[in-house]
Image (cartoon, rainbow, N blue to C red; front, side):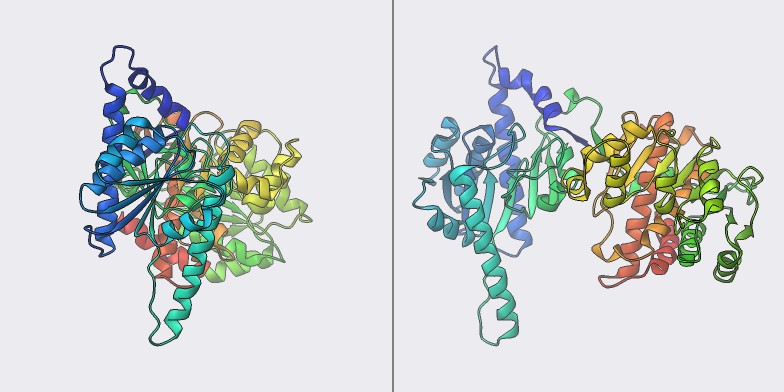
Length: 528
């Protein structure tokens, strides 16, 4: 499991070392560890790209704080390995000891000014490596002045190179110029380490080398858009870190947490899921939700809905038991409500409300979201996309539109969980899960190809199936360091991971359908 922390939490853990009141040099040791890890990550990245080290060019964009010091010390180590290093001092001043070590190693430093922005942007774009060490975790807002102009110009240079490379692919004899390998030092400058908010302009990194622990803002959109892959460098503060702000489940966690039937299991002990979904306008949503639930191993699915939709569900999934009764009469361990519901079908909407009010674990998706009460319970998992979350928050008196939610996904999900007292799963390129208490998860196991009609219905089915199987199984969560009372968020994160992995498997690098994702979920469960 990956644990991520806010920049504030990491700085508090570092503070006793950086204060260095006894003159022990502990702060300098932390910086040297960070610089060594950063330099090694650059070396590994270049080798992975098939590039030699000796003679390669490195441009390090340097701010005036400790983040710039990390970059300068790392660049000094790279210069010692025969790499040509240039430091662009974006604020004129720089970390004194770092700059001295850089110059001693043979690095060349140049001060950024208004008249050399274009020249230095071109220099950086033509380098083999660009290290972004301008703003660290303590920065407020984004780049300003000449530094902002430099990154804007560098982004334009990189875009021009990408366009030239596309032309080169289509023309015989044209040389292709490989774009620079961009490495962010701790966080990409302009990305908020706490929230993931991104203040333009931001230089998108291929790799972010972060120190002490992963930062929460790197695992939440839009910050994740700019982070690239993430490498954590231990620097000796790890024991001082508090409870993580955000966690990410990995394959080993899924293997330990996913249900396995015991020898004497039967369909009822393996979980029964009730499904309220579908309408005349969207009958397929009910089918896909049921397919997702069946693929995730639930013992039985009971469907409640319109007769025409029930007929379609029977044809597609003969295993599903269909009926037209009430929620109170259905014997289930969990409920899934909402996929494909029509806001004019009061019978289905009342079933959705009854399920959420039943006290049983319930996943509420799509059409159920506007029909439920404002205040719910932690075992109710809401699964909005950004537009639906904006509508929910507006109903609760928070003035955020879709763009505002997408600009600060972690904050929006937290607000929704706090106000509704439910668990909130915000769907997106990075799926975030926020509990109304303290546990938050970030999963990014999928591919952009799973952004397809019906994919969310399958996800809802997987969540519902895991709720039915695991909702009463308190013990296994405590063994993985998860508060059993917070297991609803963990179950939602597990489902998001399974869904994303299934999308990758079904896609194979190309288009995929929601039905394909459901089929692939079985293989994912076998593999983990």
